[in-house]
Image (tube, rainbow, N blue to C red):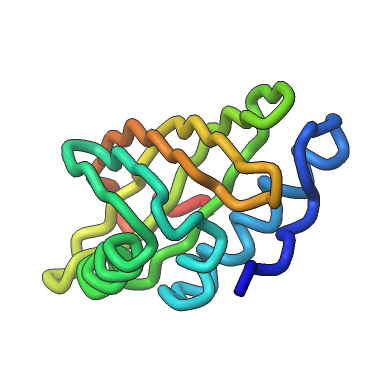
Length: 138
């Protein structure tokens, strides 16, 4: 059974690329691995930091572990650039570990979508900066 289309669809315009980025930010801020993983193709390919993740099931497993470690996670994404079926994003998010140490994580993502609007490739480069809770800005 084919999946429904995930609007907006490529080819992207400034308006639809911006919408796609906002939808992703909103979804990730729910910290719901089921909801977030459904934005990706069944056979999606990811590079997240040093990890290589293949398929929606692995994405869901990765997200569960991520949000067990990254507590009180809050994300902000910004459109960097776009073309037909690709979007570049910069982002920052804040979180703390179980010991209470806060971090701000910065990075860039390169996204590629299929014709039905699902992300088939996601390549993320991320750096973590320890911060004091008083320095939070997201």
